Image (tube, rainbow over all chains, first blue to last red; front, side, top):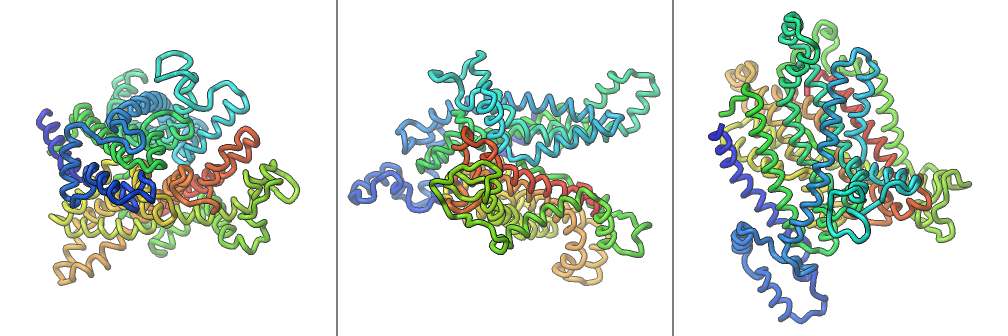
Length: 317
Length: 301
């Protein structure tokens, strides 16, 4: 088991190398050079050259890459061109806010999805099954940023019961576990959870249904087990497949939150990324992308390892 | 909006129900099954309506979608001369929604087509040749898989800047890896069948084997998978425009319209939500059609 985890970690090294190359390339995909974005067009050439030297843009690309890589590996993501503060500090505080929202959405989506998917698989009536299939279809088809706007229209504009934007009350400096802050989380959480809800419900429904048709379930019934005891066996067998999909969805949720955070002005990584793009603040763009991709990789690794732990049938060589 | 990579079981897919369709062949039987599927037919009809009306929009006698008017801003639905009201700059909403389909659908279908061409060829090559080539191609794809798809699209577009071409490019890049992965896995499965060995033993070149024996067997699953990506692409393209990273104003495009109408949610909320209804409708139709196609083609994915 430990050996497998180590091997998986080792396999991550070349991927991480590729990811770092791609993230580094982001700056050079940008039209023009990164300095011209922050200096006025009539700036004297000496100032531009000096800034280029300061940021290291005057060196050849491979040199720039290795310099950037060594600095990045020490945890220094550079300095924001827009605010002059360290990128690592900015990304860290935003990442915390994103994670809070992501955890809330994950818990909400996954628990509801397991309930809906299982009841659809068990349902004797076609209506329940149809209804759940409809819900999961809606989940994968709805543009979630539009749903966010519709939620704001219904609950903030028309009914006036929930706040339309922000992480907390006006003078709030950060997230705190109290009712005022929870109220601000409700709409973003719902909007963020529709996609994972749809995808996971679909997976749970089909996996549980498939498991129910296996012979061991008939054997358990013949043995005289109660339905709830059988359900335990069924869920245990359906778990690995569902876990894999859930892991992927949890990671995609972090990416999907960019649009939701923009709608609700939630001060997370997505909001940071979006404002960085419009200020042409490339170090922030680079840093945020790197941190999110790194998190996504670690999440996938964790899910992989948990999956092997849950399911002894998976032998990985 | 998340891209799922299904595991495709080509062996199961290739055992086709021959009893009922022996005399008709595979594709006619697919068509017959599609004709008996009302949900798929209705979805196809709706999509056809949206696509056709956006193509022939200039012939429909609609109002000018670019003509602004300061006095006619944010008319409600059902106003005389403006069936669906007017937007924040006084432009006719109905015309803009119809014209908007042009860019929105193009941005949804085009990246998937490009990715199908590039990712499909890469995947089939990787699956058929195997060995080091397979390693090289698939490890590069793994790098792209290390990013959540939305993040990759936004970061690429954000770095390259707004604009239709850049959005097309970044969306194509996002869809190449999943299509490549699916193509590789089905091709690897087909390569293991006896008829491929038989063809090779009878002296067929690699290119001939791919063209004659492999392509016909892998194209179905790959195509079905690609159609399931179109709805994701439409939502993602609209999302990029919504963030201001896609199509530039004043072009009518559903995501961009949703963005600019956000300021109107207190004045005319129903109007502000309209472009999203279009995105939702087309995406749900593409999803249902892809499901229907999958069932009709008997692809287990």
